Length: 116
Image 1 (tube, one colour):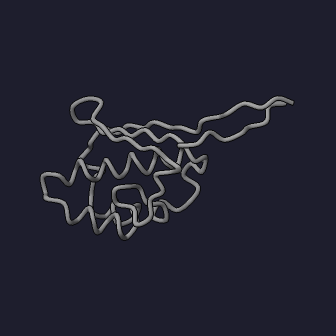
Image 2 (image 1 turned 90 degrees about the vertical axis):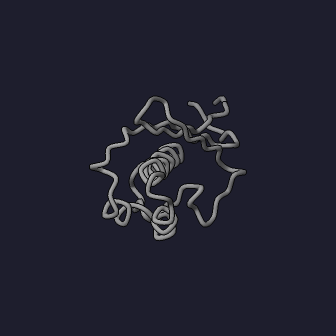
């Protein structure tokens, strides 16, 4: 048996589709706090805020290994998260191209993984 350090990471991107970004979608898939903070954004920042939250949440869920198994409203992504543990995760949001938002999540500490 040998050991190696495994880094958990995920990247995701989304086209900023106004048809997907709606109050109804935010209410269904975002936590109450995320939805509240999103509603507080100025109208011109709402679409970008929606997709920043969406892609951060997706990247964190994928990197953690949970995928979409937990209820999406039960998982909060920064900066909308009430509790954020930056010592466990690094998270970046950016625009890879016009009309797109993306996020990358990387575990701050490698996890020991046994190889057989």
